[in-house]
Length: 79
Image (tube, rainbow, N blue to C red):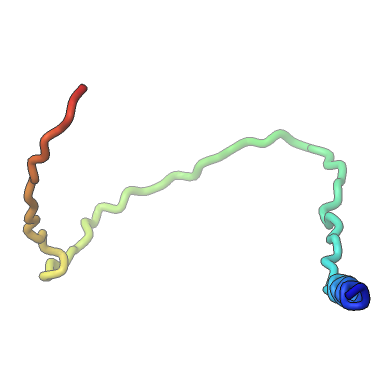
């Protein structure tokens, strides 16, 4: 019996050690010092409104479907 337990321990240890270990990936982001020459000046260019209305083709798929529903009255227990 001791022999089987010993073989089981050796077998399990071998399997655990045979697994691929994940390598720890080092951070590849490097830090640098940035020298700011000018300040940031946000600028928005002129935009023009589109004067053309979109055309929508109405088909059976875009029509409103009738909604059917029912309300079931259920007594509510109050304390």
